[in-house]
Image (cartoon, rainbow, N blue to C red; front, side, top):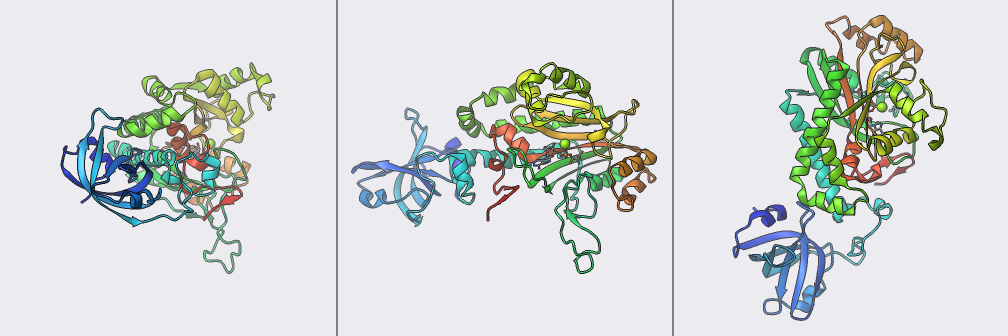
Length: 447
Ligand code: 4AD
Ligand code: MG
């Protein structure tokens, strides 16, 4: 088996023979010696291969282009006094898959907008290598976290007949009910929550992690039509326990991911306009701030001249500009806002004693805004029916959900974490289109 470059760089014995495969990142040198940097996607770092004139026709090697796949046999050398701490002295090498002149990734840096036009090759740049390596580890660490807390991993359906958020944002599968595949109107799921709630009654602690689809016509840096969402649901939990769970999960996942990717974080940290690692560590080392929605309104109304939407009073939904102001200018750290007015929150949220607010929270983070939305769920069937009517949701379609309350459901709480927004927060990348391999957003889909 051929070791990955990540492993080789870390601990390969000096002067040992080695075989390596990867793609050319750079090729430089002169008539006597050439240096090819090779990358195999296991790390943002490259390994330098040294070709000398005794063993190779250097004029031939000079023709090998960036992006080509190489197989190299050589001797591994530790080089503690050089810029990179190791290299491979090539004994033989084959260009197994040469690139042609059109390979778009070359030495000079390409901006993110241009790279968005070529999602099939953009991951062969350092920035996307770093983002996608971190994305992969974040996903694994999320599973590790829930495993460590004894959660059941449940696969909630993608086709559904329920509009789980009651916001009418489901992509419809087939309108023609008579000739369609399913006997009723079916959409792609906007959330796994309702089905997750059914499983929380019986399994107690469950989570889903799956693709989510929303036909929101918002062309912003943080909305995608297809994204991944993590949704835990825990029976008997209250809002406070729900927020604590979100907090624990974020700390576990971010801490472990930083530990596993020192080179990728170093690369991104140097690239970011702000102090990426310092900010993440600040979150890890401090207690999460929790404030009431009403407090958020007070803070915002005292700065109302800063916003396009200036009419700030109890009852308004917070706009992106408000959320950004709170995290980027007031708190400079993640903050959870709790107890929102019921008017603009989903039907399933627990109505507080005041009859005005629901036991919900949004967790906002710097640079992104809303990362998590969650709540304690309503258990009182009559209140649920009232809310369903208020939002014009079909009670018939929700009957199974209402029935849960008659079958041993004493209440639960859960949340939804937008996975791409987590990738944005952790990597410092500013546009959701750069946090997912093949983005689908309003008005845009490639390949
Ligand atoms: O706040 P949302 O709509 O909450 C729910 O879906 C609940 N059912 C969650 C639950 O309680 N189980 O969505 C949850 C999170 C948001 O905070 C956001 O991070 C992300 O999902 N999200 C999106 N991410 C990317 N593109 C979009 N269009 C998104 N819409 C929501
Ligand atoms: Mg939300």
